[in-house]
Image (cartoon, rainbow, N blue to C red; front, top):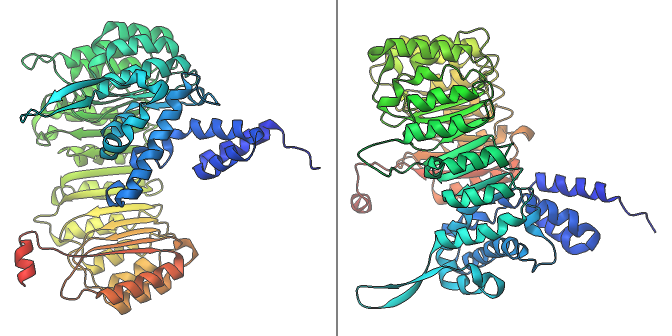
Length: 550
């Protein structure tokens, strides 16, 4: 009889399966033997928040009704097993394995139509009945029904589960301040909070509790921050108080997903974490942009995202001192590797001198909402990062561009030889010859998204010769022929395995018929296991009725 593998080896193997997202394999291991069950279940539940079943699956809307119900049932079983284990009614203590508790996902389950109509009664049966919170409602016609109180139910579940999650590192959802005060003493490993609403952070008891009981807390994400008094906005002050209450130099990541009122006080308070803050993503407003230079204490940044809510303030033209101080700040961030400026009118102008800094080594850059003809210097400055840039996304207004403006842009892009992912959204500018010139020497490219004035077969050989390409979207009005696309496919090699080809604005007058699309899709799958998504251009000014009539 062959000797059994040591337990630590089994744990390593199961951990690797979890890293590879092999959840079905882990489940089969758990069912195979009791020796495998513990390491398999430990890693299965440790990574449960990344399971494809969460959220109702990848393509819930396109799933047949019967299969949709099955998906929801499996989704509910995942949550039911975690909750039931906190009551000691399961064979294994699943909740003790988990590192992430995502109450957003549980809320999505409760809101799922299949759950409410077919699964809810079974879910809240037996021991879980104690968590169900409902209310009676009455329609205008007098009909009565029982409605699940999602927030109250989730809080009751959280109260039980958090008493048995010693490994928990992340908790997310629409959480209440009093719940956070009660739960944090039980979560000594907590590192990350993801809040739908930032209002719980206004409670000083939350500050104290996190500071005292969660020494590893270092990441915060806030989706929105509701105002209690619409006439008086104290969110900036309240948020600054919270940031200042944290251990100095402890915050590593802060992400806001909407304008939460952060302004001068918040920016100054972030300097309290200037040596530790590595990842900052902020929504700004017309008011807060004028204080952007107050972030200058945050020089340890590796990733920066600024999204302007309004997109109208030009700092260079209206507040040049703030503009220059912001450039000086970014130039001091020697570890900065990723910058994303969205709907930020001054983004390209800010980046121009930063790109020229010798010590700045950007790997990812995303700029949109800029006027191309006004930023030749920005396009030229991109070349100074040619050895480092692996991902670039540019989207701007090409109106009134001259030939030399376009030549400067093309000449700069073609020199970015380390580029792996390139997205160019310049409507009605890039002709075939420009696309060929840009892509012919960028042999490291893996992902392409490009718009064009009119795309023809001439661009396909250049794109087909890219040895590492696995995802290409050609989003200009295209007139590709069957022969051109077959020749393109025949050029693909082993490095293009699994390529996804998207042609999303095919000219209806020269479009491939259904038979040609089918044959081409089969050939692409046979050659490199690729897929083709082929969509006709639809004139936005032509109604569906007019199209049908034509």
